[in-house]
Image (cartoon, rainbow, N blue to C red; front, side, top):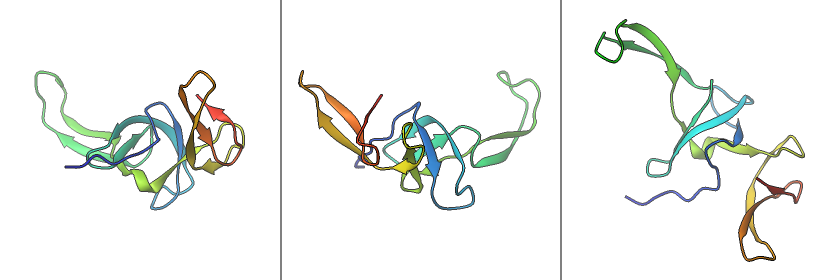
Length: 108
């Protein structure tokens, strides 16, 4: 399987642009480039019925995040406070840095 190329990374703040959670934002917990999914903190919550086991002594209904498609989220620019696309810019020392297309600022 081919990996999906994305500039979104773990720890970024993203905004959901389509679907049930549209308009909400959160921090990225993990990125799955093989399946093209991203896990966002406190978004797309599902209820999972689990049996008790060694790791989880108490069973029951647990709430956890479900993955969203990478195409349904956009990076939230820390300067402009708006969803934006990301580009790549070469710095003077040769390193590559991510660049916000909206504010033209380098994001960390």
